[in-house]
Length: 360
Picture (cartoon, rainbow, N blue to C red):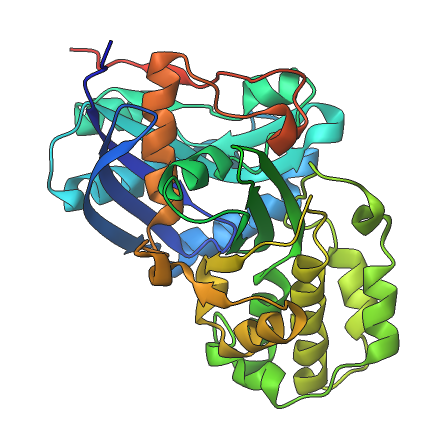
C-alpha cells in the first residue's frame, strides 16, 4: 500500500554553534518526493557564547539547572523564527535541538530545546528527542544521517562514501547491496574554528588559508592519530570535546599556521582512514568543511578516488542536516527505524523520537 508523503520542516543546530538551519521536504519516510525552501538563521553572539559555555559546563549540570533552561528558551525561539522564515506549511517539524553533552558510554545524550514551546509558537506538531532511544538501548546515538544519505543516494553507483565535516566529522558508507556503515571519524572543523577564533578573531579559517600557509608537525600528528579511538571498529561516535585536551597539548608551542596545518591534516587523515568494508567509487563531502579548500585538497591527496562536494550529486550541502531531521521526523511518525546496528551499534533497527502535539 502506497503511503502518502508528508510535508516536513527539519531544524538543525550543529556543533559549530553559529545558527540554525531549516529545510522543507516532502517524503513518505523512505523516498524523498520534493525538496523545498531552505534558510539559515544566525544566532546572536551572546547566544553562541552561552551555548559554548554550556558545552563546557554540561558534564556538571543537571537538566533542572536554571542556566540550561534560560539558554533553551532563547534557542527554541530562534528555531521558531527559522520555521516562519521557511514560508511553507508543514505536517510536522523535526526538531533536533542543540547537543550539549554526548556520552553514549554512560548511556547519556543531552539535547536542549523546548518542543512544547516550539509547537505552541509554530502551531505545528513537533517530532523531537531522536537519539535517546538509541542510546538507552546501547547504541552510540550518532551519526543519525546515514538512512537519509541512503535515500538521497538511492540511484547513485555504489560503493559510495558520504563525508560530513562539521565540528565533528563522520562518514556513511553505502554498499551495492543496500549495506550502510557509519561512524564519527574524529574532529572536523571544531578545533580549526577554535584556533581561527583565538588567533584571527574569525569564526573559521576561510578557505583553509591559515592551514595552507603552515607546515604539518608530523610527530605531533602521529601523537594525535595514536589515540585509541582510531583503533576501534565502526560504528563509534564522539563528543565535540573528546579530543580537546589532547589537541591542546599537541599544538602547544606551535605557531598558528603550523598548528592549523597539523589540525587540518589530523581531520583529513582520520577521515581517509575511516574503517569501511571496501573502497568507494566516489567520495561526496558535505558540511561546512567542504568550503575549506585546503581540507578538500588534503582529502583528494589521501583518497585515490574522486572527492567532490555533495553539490556534484545535486544535493544541498548547507541544508543536508536540516533536511535529514525533516526526513527522520516522518520516519518517527511512521514508526520506521532511525538507526541501525551498523550505523550506531544499537542491537536492532531502532525507531525513536517523541511527538509534541499542538495544544489548542
